[in-house]
Picture 1 (cartoon, helix red, strand yellow):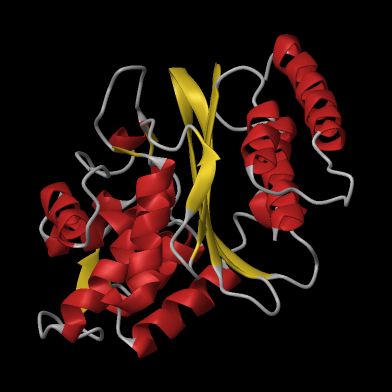
Picture 2 (spheres, helix red, strand yellow):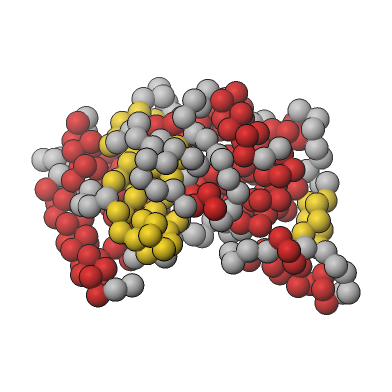
Length: 306
């Protein structure tokens, strides 16, 4: 990153800390419109979209709730749910195997690359992974190859969008495969969602769309996902149970995206779904520490609201 971006890191960390302090109530908690104000105060440059959905009554609060943001890899949570949903309807058994070859590999392919390399050592031209292995890789490690192979098998981006529509989400859309789907620029609706739409979709998936066993497995995978350790989960109270699916984008002439969709189980109350989409407005390849720190501050704000 450039020196100007390093300066931005320092600035954002300072702003986030100041905003957090300024938004505390007398009782050291965040209630009502204070939540929206606290979230808005974290935004400095770019756009920060946040939806906080309470599964107890379905209420949604946040900031820039209905603006479109790039999905990036947050779509892989819904993709994994699609695999379970199709299996439950008799479409494809979870243990069905799909081939993965060298031509399928992308830059980020931790699970599938290891499988292809292992197959090559055995003298095999391709590896074979089950649907459930691919879904777990897409969710827990954000393996882009696993996501592409599953997406093709499920019917492509149009089938993904149709799944969203069937489950009450009229906003989220997928148009391309990895890695092209991460190239989302101002005014481009392709491969986007809104914080409200994603939070409500995830709540529906866990609220009855998926069978109990599938919900349990997907929750377990979200808890095991490590890519969000420095994002929303970092700011939550230590006794809150949480799992997530991150999304990250950027590149030449493309602004950095730093996203996180989180399933949260505060003790003694109904779970929350928090969807955070942060378009930093700064072009580059990867979020800075300060970009992720903004998402951690979102976690702290949510923690004080609950």
